Length: 569
Image (tube, rainbow, N blue to C red):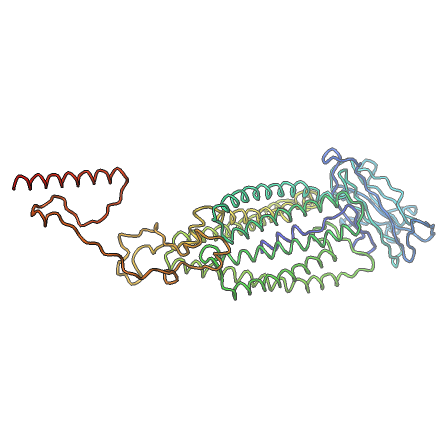
């Protein structure tokens, strides 16, 4: 689930500082705002309200009109001052927040406050601002934000049948991003640099070994994946930068969102595809997978890419996954988005379950085969892979548990007031960091080295006794001897290697002629004198000095034999 969580976290639609407002579920909206001294920028932080529609009246910027039947009350406040709103009713502790007929009869408010929010304390030195909107367009509101906090805007209309729609602008100093998402801008910038540095180091090692014909196909996949992840992270960073610079929404931002969803779907799919190939032993246990198995893996990747892309685009178009406040309109239905999200989610869940099952099964089978064949070094490689995956699960679970303990240790007010500042890290950025760590570990295990290449093209000789217990391997192999599975890979190009899967002597043209015969010469036969250190060796291998010494000794023996002949004669 980690890879999906990582993709969805990255894919969260950035919330602009403008939030929809209506008479239904969005009658009250809240958002964090940074003071200028806490997160600087060219603008002055403030809050303003715009009413776009009231019943059948719609705002026209080119031809504004005035109406007499529009009345929407609102209150702007920082969440810490919530307890100052409302008037207590008796000793029950219950409060009335609106001056209506019941409040008037109870004497909780005056007639001139009818239809407005009320408070039992003096709000002069607080963050509370109470007023009404009587016309369409921008409200006559000037609400500067001088202190970082979580601010809310609550609205209502005394006409229970009235429907209205507008928007609240929580303007920060830095731009158009919401305060809860501005930390993502530097965070993804740093992550992009980390990917770029990793790509540079891996690429240098790759091209260094490429000149020596020591590159495996799996390492090519890893390099391509690393380049793609660098580009994808750069796109995510540029998206948040684009939203921060863009006032409102336009067609380019929407197209960019679709483009980013396609990239994220490809990232998710190719990550699972690559992990499945590694689990099947591609690149280490076997240089090539059977065509039938590879075709099935590609079919599964295609289905998963299509379903995840539809799901992510559907999530984009229906709602923002990282919203701190809802933003549906008057005519919107809360059932339709959930229905379509479920339709898109079902095929993604099926393909993810299939991927998880196949990956775990393939790793288990590969590990069992390596253990049976006593491939100790390759077995250790896959054991390290399993440790990396287990560590990633531990980090993900640990992050969730730690965040849960932090939230449980906070009061309800502290959760609302402070959670918006750091929620992005656990929900959005922590999965991205964990994903980077997983890929970095896998890339390190399968990095281009002489050892990795020899490990892929060689077969480790069995360690210990044979399967029958005959002890035929005792005293000879101790886990450090290898035999080449494919010697031709050492001296042929990649194109030739695809046509030459093994080096077999039966396929080579070996001359069948008998070796030439030589006639032996023995000086002892002619002279009847035994010669010391005589040998049947025809040739002796050595350097030129050794040959000269041998010829001198031979001449000395011949001279000695000749002198003996003369003495005997």
